[in-house]
Image (tube, rainbow, N blue to C red; front, side, top):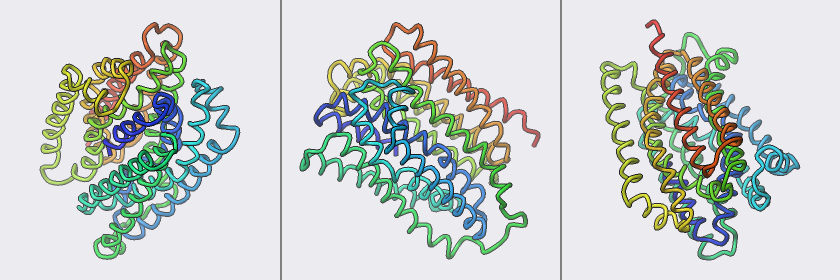
Amino acid sequence: MGTETPTLTAFVARMALPEINLAAWGSLVYPISLAIEGPIIMLLAASTALAVDRPAYNKLFKYMLVMSVALSILHVLVAFTPIFNWVASGLLRVPEALHEPGQIGLQIMTPWSFMIAWRRLNQGVMIKYGNSRAVATGTAIRLSTLVLILTVGKQFTGFSGIIVGSAAVAISVTMEALYAHIAVQNILHNTLPESIESNPITRDSFISFYLPLAITPLMTLLIHPVGSAGMSRMPEPLSSLAAWPVVYGLVFLTRGLGFAFNEVVVSLAGKPGGMNQLRRFARILALSTMGIMALIAFTSLGESWFRDVSGLSAELTRLSSVTIMFAILMPGYQVYQSWYGGLLVHYHRTRGISEAVMVYVGLALLGLWLGAQFSTVPGIYWTINVFVFSGLCQTFFLRYRYKGISI
């Protein structure tokens, strides 16, 4: 999944008006879509932890439907009504040139929340019952569809980059969700027990378990549009907003391994010898991913990535190459966020996760506000450093909460 954004931006950067379309994607379409889908992100972890039998799965499916329909309605309201103008102009204050392409892209992304919820619920079941290979296959289908649509759109249509890119993302995630639905059927019919849970899931118990998890990504993802708003108020706003999705895509490519570690911890922490192996793997993964980032940042690989692979202009290449130097710690602390967060989920102490996110959000908001008031450097430099500092504090708070568990 981490290759999705770099692939998208590489195509869009080679189409007409690349700076405008990249900035519209990075400041409006993608961050708003992520913020709206925030409450259903943790369905993957919830499904991995709670789908112990068929009645539990059926209830999780019902809750998924309710949440995803509600979020899809919210997406439609933002994308197709004057609410968009208020968000783009009044709240985020992104440059006016980005408004029209941003709204078009957001409208095309309407299926996003529902499809993400549907496939994450089913992927959690596949992970829980040892079929993580099907998750990888679904991702391959998603990426293949993405590349196919981007290629056709670039070579054979006159559509803008934002239209082609948004359509590619929306259609590819729909194909992945459909595949996950098909792939999970064998588990549902042949592996998932009919009924073993002595304390079945109720609405109240699900809300008690899931609400802290839902707050976690919601608060985190809300920072993306806030980051766009901050950069819009700092020096070099258009260049920063255009470079941001490319930089974020590269960072996410290395952080993705750490994100995936969360469900692995939830699934394996209770198995014999699981804790020792997971702890050892976390250390190796953190050092490896930070090493990769350092290699990219401090050698010519970074410049080659942004110029030759991502297709950025000389100005945006320079801006992105410097920014990535500040992000070296991000994949490392992401591993440990997943380690401590996964353990808190395993022991059903999810409140500490939401508290850690509040620490992150509070510090990030303060840092971005200070940047809007006092920054004299390009907004992307200030923003990445704010996110790194806030993320480190979030990680240490998760560690503090885990150490406080009396097991």
